[in-house]
Amino acid sequence: MRISSGMIFDAGVASINRQTASLLHLQQQVASGRRILTPSDDPLAAARALEVTQASDVAAQFKQNQNYANSAMGLEEVHLGSASDILARVRELAVQGGNASLSTAARGAIATELRARFDEMLGIANATDGTGNHVFAGFSSAATPFGGTVESILSGNEIDYVGDDGQRKLQVSPSRFLEVSDSGNDVFKRIRNGNGYFATGYGAGNAGTGIVDSGVISDPAKWNAWPEKSFSINFSIDTAAAPPVTYYDIVDTASGNSMLTGLAPVLPPTAGSGQRAYQSGQPIMLKSQGLEPAFDLGGSVLISGAPASNDSFSIVPSSSQSIFATLANLIGALEAPAGTPAANAKLSSEIGFALVNLDHSTDNILRVRAQVGARMNENESLGNLNEDLSLQYQQTLSQLQDLDYAKAIADLTRKQTDLEAAQRSFVNISQLSLFNYL
Image (tube, rainbow, N blue to C red; front, side, top):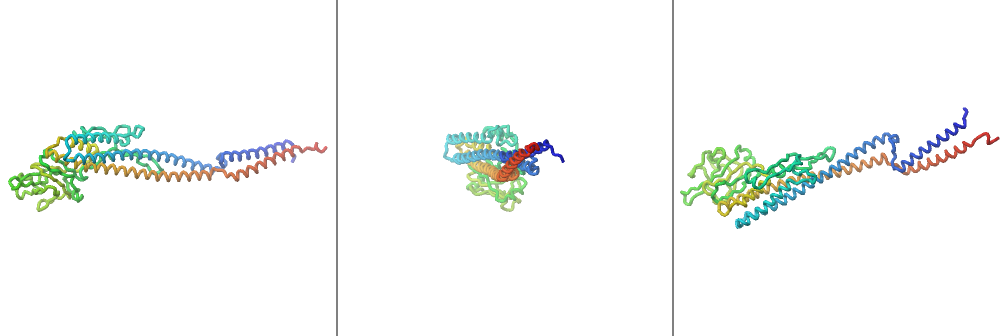
């Protein structure tokens, strides 16, 4: 084979170029700290690194969502805490307002503060998150959820709610959509009044000093089994007796018949009429107590004082009553004319109803706060898991992409030596010529 001088020069230059390119690639790896500069360096590792990078980006987005969720739930928890504080203060004012020695002006002053508390509670219910979205409006977060006044509630209208029952959710992990809000209905409106089974009421025309409590249910199964649950406890006085005797009867509101005899109440009461002698402060059992038709609601009502003849107290199934209605009814009771024995008895009953309903409202707020706290704890746990995953992704990417500096520096030194040797040998070979020996 004939080797020309041109071939020698071309081969030498090509070898030097390859050595230079290899050295440059090593220099770029050392400068960047990355083993993979292009996918061709390690196709399998490059594909795996892309998958890990995408998973890491998703984890980073979940971290942002978790931060937003924590902020939203933290804001809601602050408002719920303020609502609890308001209810605690309202309860103090209700107890104070029930003091029989207070003057009308003093009760008016308490009612004035209660009106301010009403407005404060309404402000919490209509609170926003700083971006214009209402915290307690459900999915309809752009609209102000609650509207109404004390006067509108006292006239028989519940407070308006224009939101919905939706709970806004945010994806905080691949499989978990976390609720970051609660509807105003669930927080402020869906609260059972009375004792949770039934609510007692004070007859509008009562003239005596009878005071009724909220009653108790000792056997819920019996209450739930009874089809009709609207009754009244009617009082009558046998003035012919010496001394006069006060009787009560439990009457079915729908039929008007006595639940103790199955017949229309006998007025005035007579022997064997089925009516029971009333004793102040003794519970009235909501059941048959002799040979009368079977009747047992599984509970009782406590009435104290001296009801007048034809006075009545109602028993109706519990229904949903908003926090605002509870506050408005308490304000109305304190602002109502007082001074007569009958008015004072009605005020005492209304104060008792308010205290029970305030306790239910507080329990409901605490229930929602507990749910928010549970979700915040879950979000924190998911955040810790997400941080562990992010760290694992970074470690995996480091194993796939990061450069082994010790090996790279050794290779760089060797490549420099190879390049210098190729350059020196090319110089020596390029000088070979027959003319040097002639």
